[in-house]
Image 1 (tube, rainbow, N blue to C red):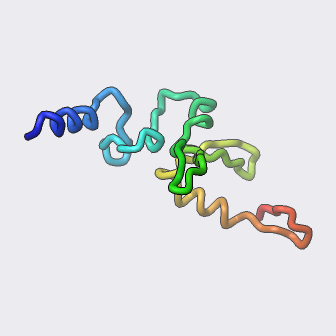
Image 2: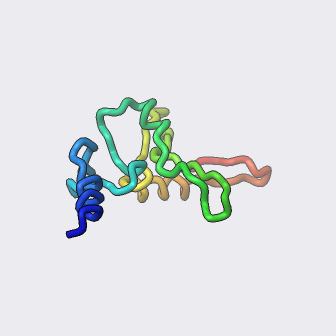
Length: 104
């Protein structure tokens, strides 16, 4: 195997970053990684994407979305692991005749 390929393989197989709980496999994108050692506030600041897109516009996408439960409790949903629950939350959003968001 070419030495450059071996080095790249070693870099992508680093063991110092957290593994994904479902699979035990490290996420390729650092923004997708779930690190339970991070505080709530640190997770709120984590970006899944922080880069220019093909048009040159700079795009920032959060790794976690904060949602409020019906009982007022706030929690963070991971954009990959909790994608189905995020979709459910979005489906609950409604807009009234004045264009104001109403949650059902």
